[in-house]
Image (tube, rainbow, N blue to C red):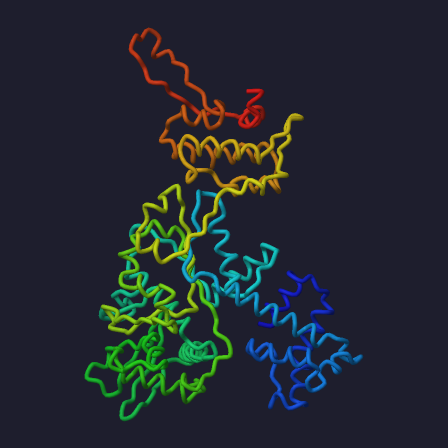
Amino acid sequence: MEEEFKEWLKQEKELARSTIINYTNRIKYKIPEKLVDVGFFNTKKSLYNSSMDELLDIQNMFNTNHYGLADWNKTKTIGGEALSSLNYLIMYKKEKQIINQHHLNQILYGPPGTGKTYNTINKALEIIDGVVSKDREDVKKRFNELREEGQIEFITFHQSYGYEEFVEGIKADIESENIQYILEDGIFKRLSKKASTKSQSNFEEKIEELKDKIISNGAFDISYGKNTFNVSYRGGKTFRIKPKNSKNPETDYPASIENISKLYEGGNRNEVYNPTYTIGILEYLYNNGLIRYDEIVDSETKNYILIIDEINRGNISKIFGELITLIEPSKRLGADEELKLTLPNSKDSFGVPSNLYIIGTMNTADRSIAQIDTALRRRFEFVEMMPDHSLLKDVTVVHDDKTIEIQKVLEAINERIEYIYDREHTIGHSYFLPLINEPTKEKLDKIFKVNILPLLTEYFYGDWEDIRFVLNNDFVKEKTLSKYFKDTTRQLNKVYEINKSFDENEYIKIYDTDNS
């Protein structure tokens, strides 16, 4: 929390670096030391680890001069900064609580180019860190860090995506000499389990240590009870086991890391494959520093994010299956109506934790909200994201002494689209944002050729009269008959083609109808 709080003081409160350092010192050291001296704390602990109720009690003691804290705060050494730092910490935690009241399930929807995927990154960081840097490079760096740490997962739904990839499915184990079929968790189940796992666990660390030991020194023997077996690792998600005195010495057996984790967190040995070998590896990890799961006390629960791009492109019933019920806030683990279901393949008892957030995106040009799965629509909050023309307010392109006002170009196009089609097929502002750093006609021409005109062609199914209307009769022209039609008397269709080059007057004419 400390780094996020310092970033919040810097970005949101615009405090000087020296002040932030002083406040951190008061929160971590000075105030806790004073509270130990007066007998409020038994042992010194950073206020970052205090609950909100505890912080409010301490704040009240300062305000009422209990234990002489107000007088102490005024001393030259403290300079009033103890109470100020405490007030800021309470303010930050309250804001974070509000931020963390984000809807557990939400979908950002709108036309193409409105920044839906872009904003999923911001929302994910708001939920996890409580603050988002104003520097986009810092935002992307932090987002990638959290993805590498496994706190954020990003997937895209498509027509072939199914329950097996999302929840669990049976897959072939190609690492084995003899093909075996194993049950593998999908991304949603894996992330749910990770969100349910105590953050102070060193399980992953100890598993990596075991892998490294085998890779560096080779396979070795482990004994458990009366059983001794050789453990090897060839990459992937399983260790390989060869029992001593086996009748088939060339055959090895899998002990999956997933099953080791399941038993570590209190699962039933009857629910795992090769339980003797799995328990044997787990006992080895305990003997080499693995903290027992029931001995871990977490000071703070981490939030996890699953971002589903193009959520409406998938078959929701097929992908979520019975879990569509479990994602409801009232059915999450720890909620008043907590619900668990038995998964059909693994027979695991499964629930969705309350610290797992689902953020989806939906392109309304593909499908309107009215057409999407009712079960999905009922369980998600929908956040509309329409074109924001104001972001292009000061963007202009000057060519041959003529000024093209980009905000007006997009406003005029979208207003016409809305009247002859609908608002769900308007065009987003993000297509034009590159012009902020590169305001050239060449760049504008490329945006129209690569993005805008193909979109309009798709929207209007090649109805060039409508496209010409949207662009105020320019950019597209009717083809003239070639020599092959010189003497024909047959009635012919009108054929159109996009101009090979665009004149700056064509852009201006889109919005300047007085000079059309």
